[in-house]
Length: 341
Image 1 (spheres, rainbow, N blue to C red):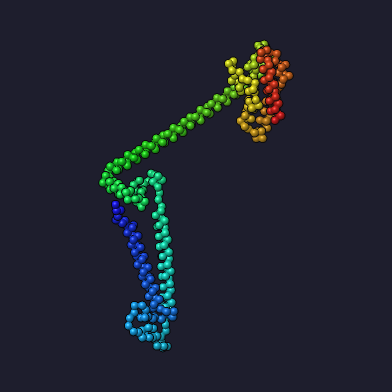
Image 2: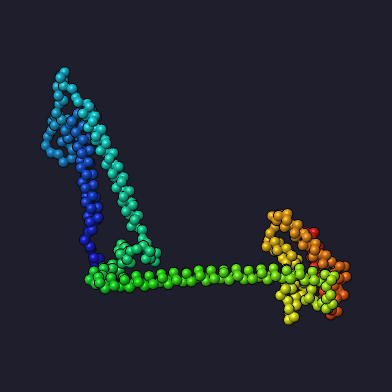
């Protein structure tokens, strides 16, 4: 199957005319240079061509071989060296110009050949280029069957322009629908993220309020236990003692925290909220340092083994006495580390 030949485009016709004009000018310049070399010698005098060159016939004389004799010497004749020099400069200028044009033509040819290798694969073309798929294809990279199919598709489009336009509108509407769905999905994800962040802030606020409420209950309960005027003779269980950890606040009759839960982190988080919020000691103000020191000293006076046993141990239930004693000793040891740290 022979390859179809299309009519040249306006750009191709212009390029072809430019190349023809360039070749004609180049030939004319070559002829001019050759004629100049034949007409002038190193002194600027004109000589005739040698009839003894290849292809010449007949006899010749010295005049025919060497040209006409020079004009007679006279005081009135002066060679116009300025004109001869100007003509020679013009010839040199034209030779340089034609040499530059030859270099440009050579570079244009190299660039044109390199551009022949430029090809964007179809999978990279995509719709983001704003061009139709058929128009984006390059026939230079098609074989005969692909080129014939490309021509047939273009002819069908011209013949069924209305159907093709409707098809293009349907595709555009489908693409717009997908874009809207994508935007709706992204907006839904954003709103869900905002709701999740809001819920997380609310949860942290509730947790902070619960912790603050237990700290107030902790202080109030210790004041009641240490008040000498209080006439509370009810025996104390393990959960009745206000322990300086947040796990004790969530304890109930069904679930009682273990002594192993009394750790340095748990105690410092409860007694020193700034430490629990990762506020370094170096960056805290003197007022906060003094407050923390007083808080630790006050708690140590409550849980010191001698004072704790003298004040509360006799009121603790016998079944919980060993566990209470172990937990109080653990709190005292942790407070000692925190105060010396």
